[in-house]
Image 1: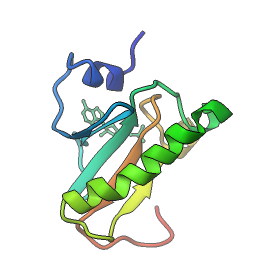
Image 2: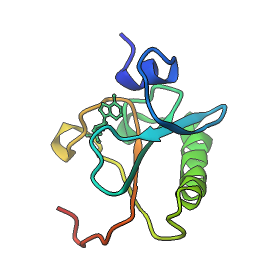
Image 3: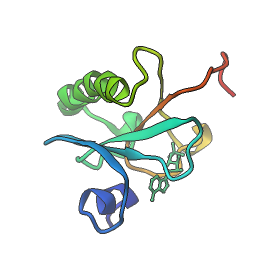
Image 4: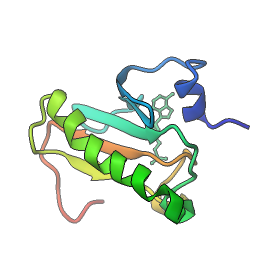
Length: 112
Ligand code: AMP
């Protein structure tokens, strides 16, 4: 059963795509929590970080290296927050690894 994000990658479900390369795709969150709220998703359907393996290290590094470039292109400069909800207890609702890239407003710490 393909994940929701696999369907977006396959263009079976529409999304506002802001970045795509061989390894990942980024699109705007349908329920944005900030003026800029983008989901950065590996094309490989890894469930979450807990489920990732040593083989995924370079892919995970690629995601972290790509996020700031997307943030910059969307006008956030160096001011953005990255968030990963890992597991149901931490708020994960789509079980295909994704980084939330958020920006365009102040953020509190600690997060809610
Ligand atoms: P999480 O709760 O961390 O698993 O994040 C899942 C995110 O996917 C939520 O922020 C949702 O708003 C977002 N989302 C769900 N469906 C879509 C969709 N069709 N297009 C874009 N974002 C979506």
